[in-house]
Image (cartoon, rainbow, N blue to C red):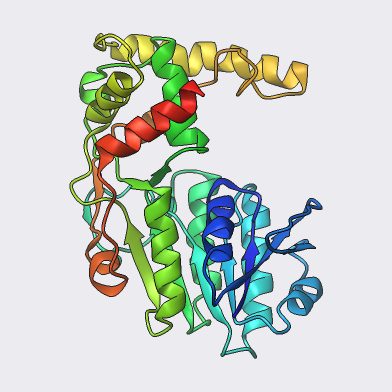
Amino acid sequence: MKVLVLGANGFIGRHLLDALAATPDLAPVAASRRPQVSERFATVQLDATQPQALAAALNDVGAVINCIAGAPATMTGSAQALRDALMDRPAVRLIHFSSMAAYGSVRGDILETTPLRGDLGGYSQAKAQCESILAPIKQALLLRPGCVYGPGGWAWSGMIAQLLRQGRIGDLGPAGAAPSNLVHVDDVVTAVLQGLRHPEVVGPVNLAMRDAPTWNTYFSMYAQALGLPPLKRVSAARLWLDCYVAGSVMKALEMLNKRKAAGSGQPVRLPPSVVRLWRQDLRLDPSRAEQWLGVHWRPLQPALQQMAAAAQA
């Protein structure tokens, strides 16, 4: 079966392509705005917000996986194009990546039946809107991952490692006491492969390891894997200064230099949305992923050892 992967250049998209290419009965096609060349799978340059171009790319395709992230207009535009293209293609399976962010500011134990608020900024709102846009597509599996980590990831892997090494995060006290809702990228890939094998599974599915640790525990375990000394307490005032005062300066410097600080050896900017998440008491219920898709969550400790080895390399 030919599988079109939208947003193939992203963190999840790259891991998906590797897994799909290694599966004998699947033939991945990598779609992205930037041209790319691969000897392992077919590629196509595509603006997924353009309905006619997307419809043409869906010819002879058995499934499409939407991993597109980025600007809200890009996400909602691609969702609208997908809806229009798939309305008369009921045999084409859709696996769409939504996000925990679609739930917005809700707290507590979160089932998939929890209403989507999408009230935490443009990204949160766009993720909720995309699900609404795609509601008419009855063959759609909507994955709502928590914080996807693993080798090659930035937000919950590379950035966290850099912040730990710089001593900017540690034991955050109440500011880091919320559940992390971590999910390893390999478990995300497993959910997609299972979704392709079981087209009868439709609707939203949360993706987060069961009994995910708090952010404070994650930081402590990750620091230990990186060979760092025991973490010190970082006060709420210091975290606020780092996020809002130093962060504003870093953002101005990034704009001035026309480049991001990530990977440049300079301190990374700590986004307010991340600091807010570290204290949001929200825990995704992963029962559907376990029961419907047979996902078994990767243990955290060996995953952190793998990430630390990759970071050292």
